[in-house]
Length: 223
Image (tube, rainbow, N blue to C red; front, side, top):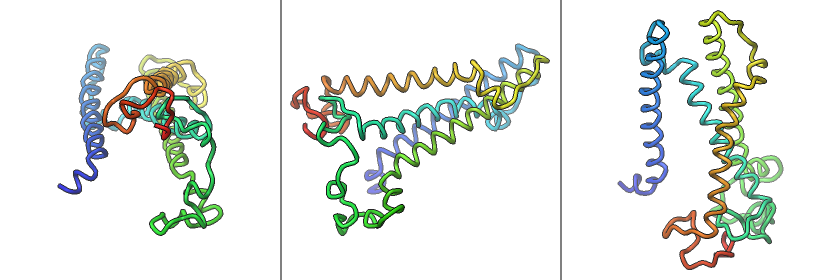
């Protein structure tokens, strides 16, 4: 119970993720087979659908946009400022900050991670590890989205006796970018809304909100 309480936030979202993914697979399988029946084609089993390009494209299409959102947010909040938002650092703290402020190198404490006391490339990698990993996951999921989408597109082309396209041809197509930008724009809107609305609105007890009594103009840790 102590472990669950100490990790309840991550466990909660992991459980939601698993339930939503299973639900998506079940609903997607039913929808796929309905379309197959409508076109007088063979239906597929649940497990065959789960490993298909159709399901992979649907999953990766959303993953890549979500990880792009967080990658950009992590990177841009280093240098960009929004007065009054708890999602922004105060204007005087813009940038990568001093070694003393970040507790690295000779300023590391006894309880600091080992790599915070390192030098050179190891310190640079650890100092930017969150952005590097999130960016790598985004790039990988974007590539997986393009490959699964390409495979699904060509399967549909063959079913309609139309010519297939190369991977580069698909990535440069309007169809690919229409679905990609459809996801991106919603993520950008969500982040922008959070940054602005949190200036004026509050949620008592949430670390994503300023204290209820904090002035609107208070930014980040200024509150």
